[in-house]
Image (cartoon, rainbow, N blue to C red; front, side, top):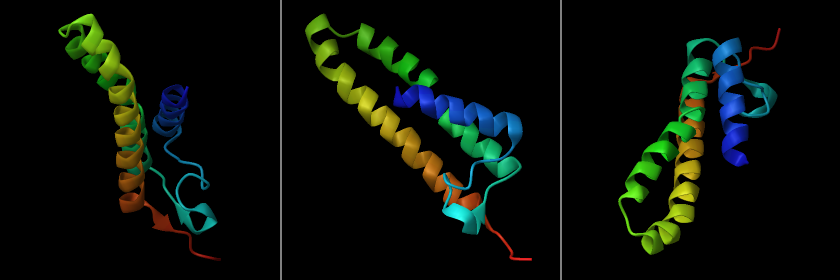
Amino acid sequence: MLTFILTICGLVAVVTGRLPAAVMGGKQYRVTGAGARLVGTILMLSYPIFWLLGLVLARLPAEQARDYALLLQLLGTVSVLVAALVAGRLVRKPVVAA
């Protein structure tokens, strides 16, 4: 479910070129343009990563694949989320009060 939510947020960021303020540091920061599209692309990487992990797990015997599947999915989701947060922190810009 979290993977689906991350993918939808990434798709919205890529299409609109903006990330919600709540995602990237509240009202003090804004992520727009190419930076938002970069973060959106990172967020959408979870399904291709899991597809590749599925190919790797298909090579293992069924007992081992079942044991590793949940762990790899959890690590993959967390790594995509951390990478998106780090990229968002690098590209965000402070909002100038008018």
